[in-house]
Amino acid sequence: MARTRVRITPLLALSFSAALLLTATGCGGESATSSSSSDADAAGKGTGPVVVATTSWEGAFAKAAGAEDVKVIVPESVQHAPDYDPKPSDLAAVADADFVLYAPFEPYAEKFKEAAGGDAELVEVNLDNDADKAKAEVTRLGKMFGTEDTAAEWITSFDTEYGKLQKDLKSAWPDGKAPTVVAQVFSAWSAKLAGAEVVGTYGPEAVTAEQLSDLSKKKPQLVLDNVHMTTGTVLPDSGARQVGIVNYPDKGMDLLTVYKNAATTLQEAMNAS
Image (cartoon, rainbow, N blue to C red; front, side, top):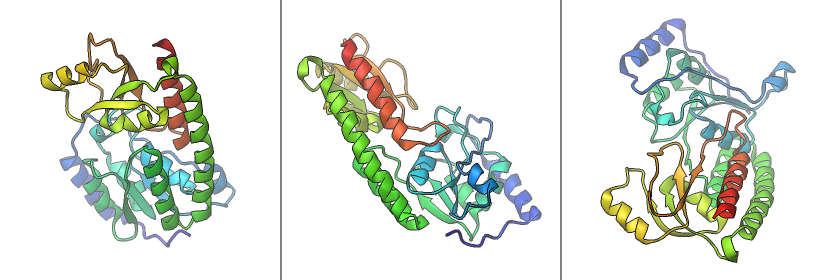
């Protein structure tokens, strides 16, 4: 159940805003806040914790774990979330939260920590769509939120759907054999979903000439690229089909949709091989 929250005073909010304007860096983007529980709030039924997530990825984990009132700071339109330039208005949402979810690689995490004050609980989220790691994170968050039953129900549903996706992808293997792939490190989870054989990985740094040569020699059928950190064609002239894998959910914050979309993309790529 949500804890009693203390709102920051206008003077303190102004101080936070001034500090943010002086120190925030990045490519910028229009601030956006979304909630998954507007209907419940309108009916006076929102009784769970108020969760503020830096991105839709953290927000999707929170929703899967059972949180209903989830607000997202970084707009969906920002392709590379760590590049976002936080706005002073973002601080107000953070200061009003019971839980603030963030990832350690996000450069603005420290500013959100300051804005959260002493009332909100700061939660570092392991953003990894590997099925086992994702389920472990949903379980952990469910315990924090007091929504263990909802989290457990989501995991049961996830296991069922994940198994179906794996079965469908296996039926699409070229010539009935697991495809060989090279994967960007943050897209390797999709190789596991497809049952593919990973013959090499790259990133998050740009691929060097030596790596390019080594990976090309592996003769992969597919390159599983991370669309959020893409640098263009990874293995040109290798004959490998490059597949863009999306890690972040859309504004609906449905984590399962990420797996469904990846499965569709992978199946199309394998059918075209």
